Length: 218
Image 1 (cartoon, rainbow, N blue to C red):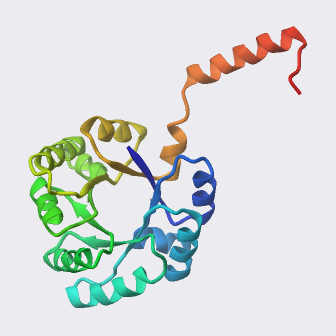
Image 2: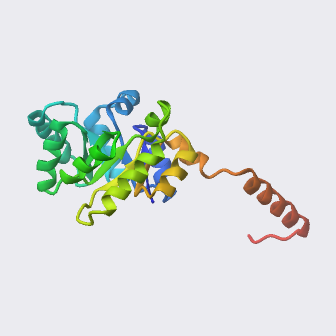
């Protein structure tokens, strides 16, 4: 599974990309707004930090303007991935951009049929929102599993399933069990994935035993 980080915080991006665990970055209008940064300059800086895909979302709701905004965003860097809403206009824009070889991420997916439409439009990624489905009493992991099952029936579909709206390490695990190709993870959640009390306890024991030997490597 690939890990994208879901943030507009440039310091978090630098820190986590340095670990080698990050394969790309996703942003959205809310994350950009919370960063307080200029949209274009922020995306440009992120693309310079990571060679992986960087999702930058259009702000228009009609196809014509989406395509104009996509043209601006795609010129920032070759690894920009245009993020589009899963609407009729968004899918029209996706189809045209995909035919031009421009990477796309179709977001706000909440059903397997929507995901099938995104794949037919040539989306590079489709983003089912796991956490938001859990919020209303549905299982987000089931949606991922159903999308994967549909896609597996049609090998010609190349769209990757990107688990989004991740709220906990458990969501990441469930997405992995369901077969998601990518999970986009808030920095806080990615950092939590490293932690386990038995790891900390085991390391403390090893260090204590080593100290008793009086030896040094350096």
